[in-house]
Length: 600
Image (tube, rainbow, N blue to C red; front, side, top):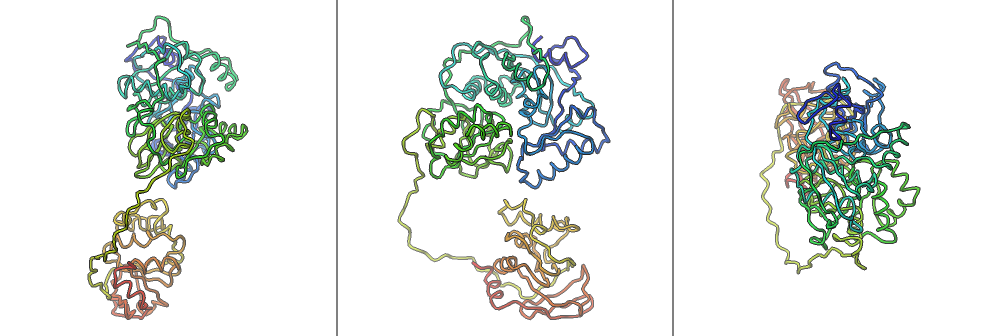
């Protein structure tokens, strides 16, 4: 049998398995991340499922290690509460990437099995373990039963022959393999890699290559554990380990002999990890930013390679370099060895351990038009932001950050490239023709939302998790969705409605969206006893009507009443009982800006 066949057989009731067999496999480590973890909890709770073995069940918070995203923070807390209830170990936001944590903590070891909500769980092939990324239903089932069903894949053998070129990194090796096999030639196969030079690969190098098996479409990339790998894993587990190796007469669907003495330093062009070319073909491509990290290249060997390039140098003007170690253990080693000081002295941003750029909202994302060179494993459109992302080795990324353009450590210029702006003669100022604002009504009539609360702040009105939205037409749907009891306001509100509330409406932050969300819904106006100072200015400048009152007792106002409001006189009339009251009308400046359609 091959490696994967042996591991599956060892974790089933069968003595022998073959490709195509569907087998229930005992899972040694059952893991959910913050990404997908909340859905795992939901599946368990909705189906009233228990936990098979809490000693083999874990949560790892790695996609949002800063807890800086509101939705991730909510999901992380759901997982924490569930974990406390059931006695499950949580590797929280201070630990690092889950798959690396499994190796560091001795929870995965040669011949073991693990599943997690991480498509790069096959990284465990680096130590000769079987790891698989799975969806939240599978992981919930693993939590509950301790087993999952799996179809035994066919295996492929790759022999890397020849001598390793000087200075060729593990990332370069896997990018060369991607050039050879593309994204689907190895689709669905378990791959085993052999060779005299392969035996010398460090753990960090094996991890880099194994992690990008996902980008080649493989089930997993196995490296038969070397003596050093076995000793490392024994030190972590405290147990004697007998690695699982393929039989000499194992059956492979294909065997490839590749001379990697001709491998060169490569990059993946933006959009497709498998679209790799020699780095020389894109040298001097100007960059805006550089990212070093991810489960592929945030190991200690990577950090040392980066430090050797950055030491005594500065990141190019206008270029941002972001560095994120994979685990907190590696972060601390960087500190102990003085690498953090080197990174900071070069002008780099160093963040706490985790997935970083592969997770939305984290360190390593880029903006539209931005050119980034990254050590990540994926550069699909939108994966690391809205800009373009090249993939390369840690040393080349560091060298590029110093040069200001894509290059290699042996070709760093004495003076970095700087951004050039074409300065053209400014055209003569011309009159801006603006569309004339239609005559704006100074008297309106509408249905009342009477919200009897003081101090409704801008996070209640328009939560900060939506602040990236710039299109006013998209803002209305989120109005009041963080105000208890009014979460469905946007669905029920109608154009022409009027909001009446109490003291200090719009306190808090300066966000304009807290005004614009009501404009997007077509709300006529907001009437309050008082407004937050910044909110008041924002509303007036946006030509959104707001008025203040001292008392509304005279009109016996109730939720749902229809009222008529005159902005210039301040007269409010309740149509239900034909009663009226005077409130504070528009000031002269407010009326002028309102009539103008806004400050501009």
